[in-house]
Image 1: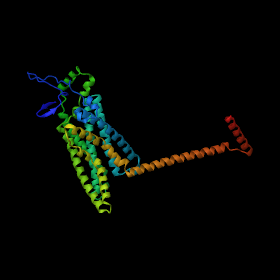
Image 2: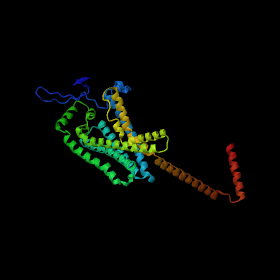
Image 3: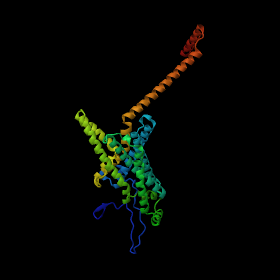
Image 4: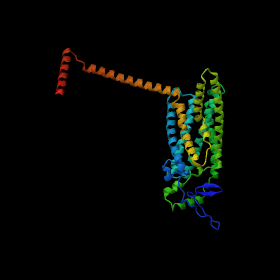
Length: 388
């Protein structure tokens, strides 16, 4: 470990660039660089006390991959359910569908972008497009969380139906507002991003000493690098979380007040309030506030990073489970559809049996008592022959 102004850092995996006595910079040396997904031998054992930054990053990336994949599957199934049942079509579920779509698009682009950077490197065009759309769908996800909070606030706190607000307003808030911020972010990012020929020449020189695969794995999309310009997107996202926190406090206050006024047991009141809070936290994105800050060093930082990866990656799963698969209306609709399919299948099977019986009785029924006796005798003879 090296020390710079009291800050400890690992100097074994950094690029170096020396300034000669003449004041000219040498080419950067990337020999010691390792990709973020390169696994150290010590990472193979589940011992967070011996992990370094690379091990922690590898573990969290695996968790994100698994959690996002599970969330993506459940969200797609939830959207299919909402779109295929007419009895579930209402403003509330329409808002849920739009929120689920932002999760789906964001997660899909996250997985696609990271996969392309890991295995194919990053071209300028692909880098720019993936960065723009990834940030756009991320911000739309936050704004549709705010739409969910606004709808519940109008429904619970303002004591009149949220359906009185037209869906067009929610659509503008959820899909149009984020495009304004992402547009400004794109403009400033384009001016701030350095695509000078010197860096390109340096990377070309590196290819002479490194293999193609190693070189591509070290390429990092410049549009994905963190900078102060990212606050153009992070600022509105933080504002949305604060607004949703206010919505949550107001909604829970009204809910607890109504529960206290009802003639129910106190423990049952607390149980209902806790259940409502648990359901609203992932819907309004309060999970981000829970893991917004944590320890940066030591064993605690690794545990916090893993916990953060788990909570954020399964947020889509939590929302789809609470508001689709565990919802009483959805379960009733699914049960009704299942019963209808079962009844129609039984009815078709019954009709098929009846038709078969009618055909047999029509084609093979004995025309006389003598023919019936002859048929019975022939059948008896055949049975005896098989027994022999």
